[in-house]
Amino acid sequence: MDVTNHLYLWSDFGFRVVFGVCGEQKENTDARARSVDGAREPESVLLQTISVCVIMPTVSQNALFGMGNPLLDISAVVDKDFLDKYGLKPNDQILAEEKHKALFDEIVNKSKVEYHAGGSTQNSVKIAQWMIQEPHKVATFFGCIGTDHFGEILKQKAAEAHVDAHYYEQGQEPTGTCAACITGDNRSLIANLAAANCYNKEKHLDVDRNWSLVEKARVYYIAGFFLTVSPESILRVAKHASDNNKIFGLNLSAPFISQFFKEPLMKVMPYVDIIFGNETEAATFAKEQGFETEDIAEIARRVQSLPKVNKNRQRIVVFTQGREDTVATVGDKVKVFPVLDIDQNDIVDTNGAGDAFVGGFLSELVQEKPLEECIRAGHYAANVIIRRAGCTFPEKPDFH
Image 1 (cartoon, helix red, strand yellow):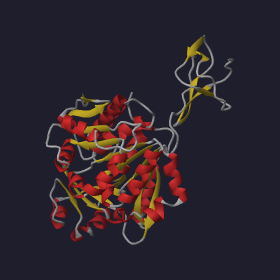
Image 2 (image 1 turned 30 degrees about the vertical axis):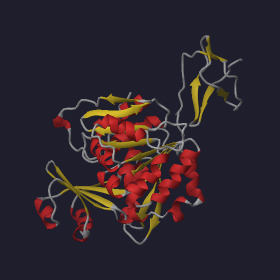
Image 3 (image 1 turned 120 degrees about the vertical axis):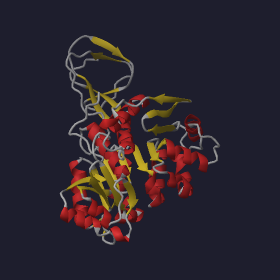
Image 4 (image 1 turned 180 degrees about the vertical axis):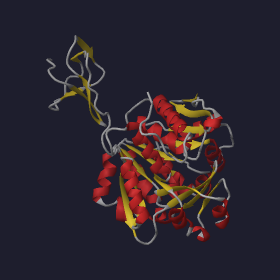
């Protein structure tokens, strides 16, 4: 075959320029190729080795799909009087009660604030997009917001992160917010889920133009928190992924999910290809399922062996343990992966570490990288995020 232009490697994730022209010929039997005009070449073709190689993005827009509870993160430095007024502790994480509702407007009106697109799943797909860089809008995100000022800011912040966010907008509840009240080295987090609790499957996910974005994706990720909002939406996406041999990931998210939302969690579990969690969430899940073990590796094995619909993909279990090794199932084995070293004095905020790990992991997964590379990227992203306040990151990653 006379190669006179570029050759493209074909995969479910789109085209990739893999060879320019120049140099000597080399036998390639690793993959079928498609030429520029789309004709499929024989499995064994003569390709020309390159001296100059043009690499195009290996992943297409909307290849990664996330759905969850979108929150507008609002960070501001406050004083002790502000904390006392709303009964807040300097270092805490709480859900907003009625007495906290005025806090969000007050902090915006009286303080210099920073806004970021937040919420667990949105954080993860945002970080995945940051790790990938180009093309923009690899990550799609669905969730519910209000028709208000905070909602407009959230849309703007998602766009700035190059995430293709398609929110269900309703007027009954305001956009969900999470205020980070900073005093010195302390951060008191107050979350008001509000509109995030109002996602409507029939009015958004089932709409043809939205469902077409679901169909376009190849990798799906949803945090377990969304089981409290729309388990039927999760189930539809999970079944689609399973029926089409795509990859569906779920996070255990918090101990209370395994404890109080056990039924919807176990309904979706047979469709889960990758399950994420930390050591506390894993232990709680094991207790609720009657595993009668606290050994993290054994819990991973037991979770992997739970019933699964799509037999073409063996379930992968990934449990992080803070500064300790990450535990993951690799084939029929359980392996440990050391995290990156960090001076404890460099740690600013660990709240976004779990979301960041998943985001880094997804950034490589959607590019069809091996599991080990996915975990390495997860460790890198978490290491970056814990050095900063909130789930924020520099302009570009330094991951190789």
